[in-house]
Image (cartoon, rainbow, N blue to C red; front, top):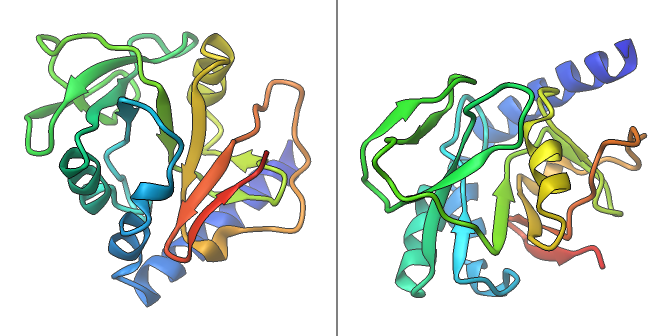
Length: 181
């Protein structure tokens, strides 16, 4: 467990350095949005801290005619739900303290989930913050495409995954889209 804790700490520091060194990375990554897997309803996230910002990606996806939604944590040990969202809609903090659509927004089922991450490997392994929210949600929605949104520099040689960790189908970065299957 301490190994993952140390890896998360190092990955957070690296992501912060990458964010400071390359403020246009999110816009460049969004320019590759047309390479994402198909899906009419795409779940994004609202960036917290040094997570790669999804504003440009949200605008690109909406311009391409895709509908957007955001995850909402209602219970800490349960899969997330998703509420419809358009860029600029008001948000409130969910149970996990993340920006989420208001309760009056419709609950929807995404075809594609774009997730933040701390690190990823070439086989689709993903290191998240450690709360398990995305892995529980991926387990409950096995047919939904799973894509990380990250700086290309967040790649590592290999992540040791636990049995509950679910691999990504691809990663969208400032250098383009990489599929893992």
